[in-house]
Length: 240
Image (cartoon, helix red, strand yellow):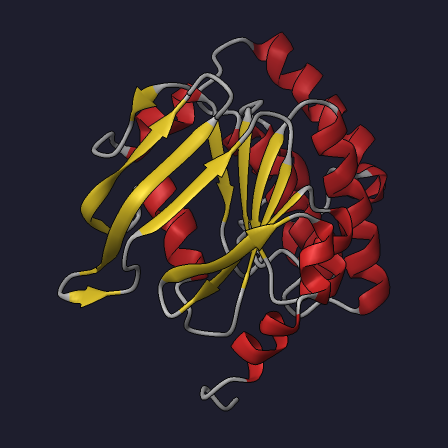
């Protein structure tokens, strides 16, 4: 199907003998923000890790821009235009903001292009501008998350995978971060985001997928959040 940027079909994956996904099928179209929500332990992060080849795919297929990438090594996926921002604000804390961004552009040999992309990142995240020569450990949690996202953007990805971007951030910072995610999307980057903060994420989403025990239980547009079944999935027999 030409209309899909990323097509996941009957995906079963996990870690060694531990299976986390049991036949997930999803379609992400170019230019949209797709959000994956669901209770803890539903397998949301495993979906992203499967797309980036960071876990064991047992069955099913992943197609990106019409190309089967199910068995493709991670670095080749990066070259095809897929970037990931893992959970937990992973930055090189003893390096400066600039050095972190330069590492993000390591596959780009053109120095001018790297400079241009750093300038673009600073446009998206103006808070990082005055901190460009500061070490990453001196940044606030929100700024570190912006830096982690900026580093992923240095590859100029067409598909950006975000794993729990708002984790541990204050509501105001989350709001600001989500506004930035929307801006990045407006410039043409398709986004697939896993998020605990369902309300904030769904506010900017074009499409919502609800994962329950390793399967897609529901999917739809913004109105999906009002579906009574969502409450059931979150509060169902899982406890907290």
